[in-house]
Length: 152
Image 1 (spheres, one colour):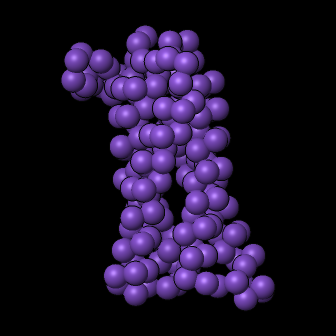
Image 2 (spheres, helix red, strand yellow):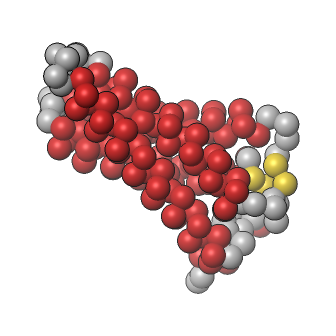
């Protein structure tokens, strides 16, 4: 079954076309790259300053995820869901609340890895970040499509 024809509850299609699905994947890939790049730059920039506190990875993740979210909103509204009606006047708020939920899902593996499992390497931080971000993307896709960019 083609991606554009997969249906969600209430009869809404996940994407209206294969091109829209490709655009969503492309925007997501760039947002993930922004997220990982800023995360690594923030962690590495703190190294010479001896700022390696236990909160540094979480602060770096907050900054990187925030930047990626801002890019994602702009790109999705311009390239993925262009022409769709927006749910209401609080579209931006809804989008950022959904992405805050996504942030919680994205940071959860990082927290588990660092706090419960004792990992502390940048490599593991990146692996856990990619895993968490992938999980968050799936949740954000459904929530964004359902509550922010509705209709055809």
